[in-house]
Image (cartoon, rainbow, N blue to C red):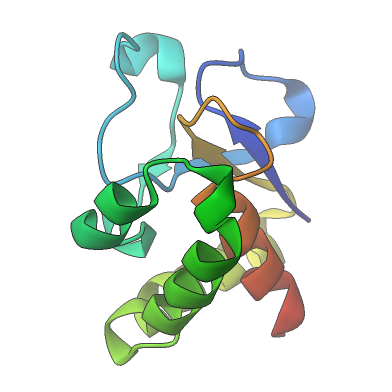
Length: 118
């Protein structure tokens, strides 16, 4: 089972294996407080795409399309497979992100992609 959650929210028993999927460490969050099991920087959107998007909801549809293209690259396939494998072997996996917007963020796109492909 895969789910997403803000990195600033406290750990819950249903979180299972917690994976930070941001390229940058969440501001003001200590490693101890985050209780992150793994940090997969390489699965996050490129720095260029992240800057272009700027969390602007008007750019959401285009951001999703561009990020999906990035995720389909050979460079990202290993990270995607790592997450799929974790979901198969560990049961619950929570993808953590720092964005304030819980709807328009890359983790929601990543979750969609992971749920589409076995």
